[in-house]
Amino acid sequence: MGMIEDEPRLTAYRDLLARYVAQDSTFSVEEIERLSEFLHEQDVSPDELVGMHHDALEQTFANPDRATLQSLNFLMKMMSGYSNEYREHQALKNRQKQLDTEIDVAAEVQKALIESDLPSCAFADIGAVSVPAKKMSGDYYRIVNDDGRLAVTIADIVGKGIPAAMCMSMIKYAMDSLPENKSGAPSAILSSLNRVVERNVDPSMFITMFYGVYDPVTHIFSNASAGHEPGFYYSAKENHFIDLQARGLSLGLSPNTQYSEYSRKIDPGDMIFLLTDGVTEIRKDHDFIERKQVVELIRGSMHLPAARIVRHVMYELKKMQQFSFADDFTFIAMKF
Image (cartoon, rainbow, N blue to C red; front, side, top):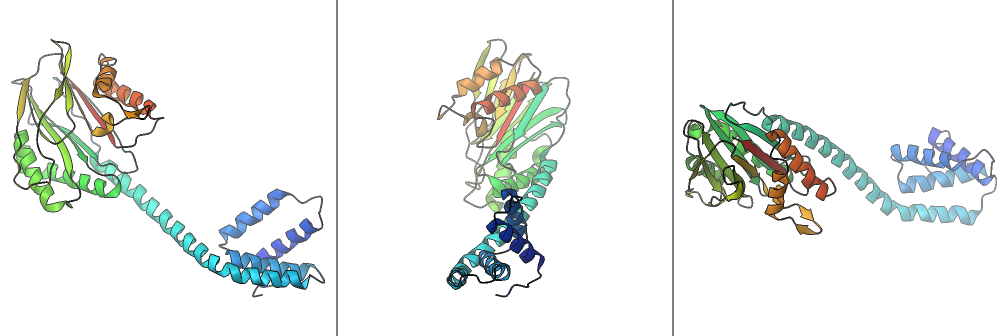
């Protein structure tokens, strides 16, 4: 049958079979499980296992029933088709393991690329949290001290997984290399990025982005948006939240898009909260939560430092979804 008589795995199989048939009192089911695991690790295919059983019968019993042996021959031939599929399945599993390892490495590289220390400034307390739904994220944020001004970017690549993560990395490098970055107006930044995205990103993908700059000298916060989820502005004087509405096409849809710029005076105690749609598309009782529920969570924690606000809101929203996110989640808090 093509099996080597003294092959260790055949010997182990034959001995275990003999003890099983003889109803040996020392026999245990765990021995079958251990042998089965061993043979699986050795990549023994289904037809090889049937052949092993055939050979073990012939070697163990003096006069094995001919019909039984012939039926095993028949079964072995029938199993040959299954064996081909088994080998293909094993090859796919091995490739999947390799791909998972590569994705783990890529995720660590991406994490190192986008993670940076938040700027320390006397005029604002800043907190940020970003959690990918999968191993790699399609969200991006950047908060820097830009010649004494506070510049904040938050973006969401429509899509998930590796394509979105690669697109996000391109946005990161574009943001770092734009000549307009230094003291540039938010509308100009988005217009420049839009041209980069339109030339380099597949038409099936697009990017939403919010870009804002706070000047501590004039106390003006200026911003522009490329179709991004509106953030929240909290007025301490009025004790009131409003949406940070800013209209504009998503990046990459049209090469000549111009973006409107919006400005507001920031008073002491005011706050700004920026987010991706992974925050507002949390499901509770099979429905998406409303933005006012996010505001309620912020209200309940806005006496805390900014870093604790974002962690508190994230925890409460994650709890609503049994501690998992269906979409990438990014939330930024700035207290002035």
